[in-house]
Amino acid sequence: MTRDDLLSELYDKTLVGNGPDVLTLTRQGLSDGLGPEALLYEALIPALEEVGARFERGDFFVPEMLIAGKAMAGALDILRPLLAETGAQTIGKVVMGTVKGDVHDIGKNLVNIMFEGAGFEVIDLGVQVSPEKFVNAVIEHKPDILGFSAFLTTTMPMFKANMNALTKAGLRDEVIIMVGGAPVTQEYADVVGADGYAADASAAVVKAKELLRRRRALANA
Figure: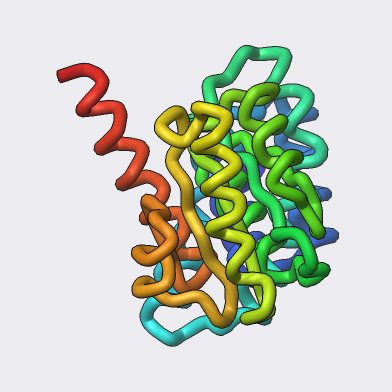
């Protein structure tokens, strides 16, 4: 199999979420001398971008996104340490967590996979994350983006509690804050003072890139 054939096959298998074949092709590519960056940026990321595009068009739905995301996550488990060794640059760092009082994480996990697939470094704080834990994570990891997820309407007020904790710690302006979850709307995101909102994982990546680009442009102005 030629280099182009392998990358094309890896793209196709990621697109349809064939996890075992994605792992096999990833390992084969490495043993054939392909660098981890080539596998990631020439096959895996383009496949996830196409998954996102198909989701936006209504050709794919959440199950297809989850299956493709899981297939890519398996490949990333192999590639992540190799990418770290090569010093490959990520496009930004994201800290993500489901807010205190909420144990739902399927949506958050899908967003994490899509972020990783787009080239972000993701630190997942898990579920039931307190305002203090978010504050400490910003201090420790210095992320570009901080994401709050809520599935229950009863836990959505934690967005504001988290914002208040960050403001009190003098960190609010140090990080881009994005919010999301099934009951969350753009209007609610505006009310709590978030920088960004996305209705789904694919849109979250697009919005994150846009917000990061804007912030960096201002910093360099």
